[in-house]
Image (cartoon, rainbow, N blue to C red; front, top):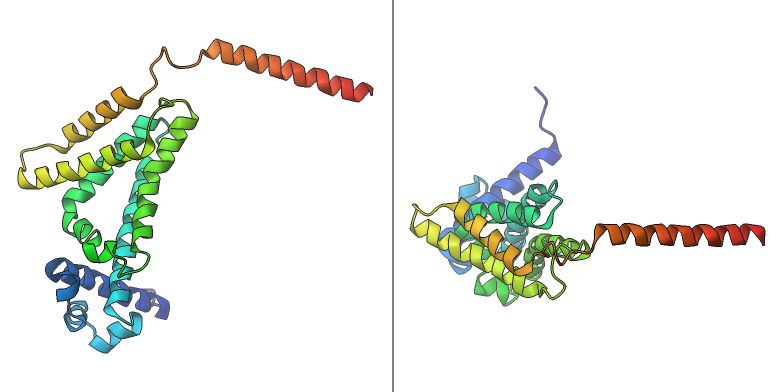
Length: 228
């Protein structure tokens, strides 16, 4: 059996503290959570918690960074092999809705007034990194002419995340509501509003002819240059 290294022990203890903090913050909120209680939940002395995190604010910030960092990684993995815009958005929506349903209390906590007011500096940046996964998909769709040129990015993003958040609340209250229909309807709505139709797409033949003309022009320039 391989011995646990000092680094691994440190990481395990930090992980235990963060998990305990997540429970305490969700149950009692930032103001109600106590470092002594977090230490007890983590199975360490209160002084040990302060060795890792100097203040409760530092611990809250680390907790938020850890949560959104994990969510961002999951999102990137979900869309990694999805090439087409709406295929990628479908995968992101399914992943986001599932995590909202399972960890809604945590999401709500990290978006609380204290975080928004900036009492824990940098927390908004962690959430922005997650939302950036959607942004990259959208920009790629625009670059590939899969989305209409008049599409307003921030409006589409609000529709995407706003719809899923509202649906998650509904599903948590009414367990008979299905997740699949939510994602399907959202993607279909986005397609109808933002997808480029076949008629709007540039002709492939025209594009190929233009490319051939450009290649021929480059060849003529190279030949002229070689003779000079």
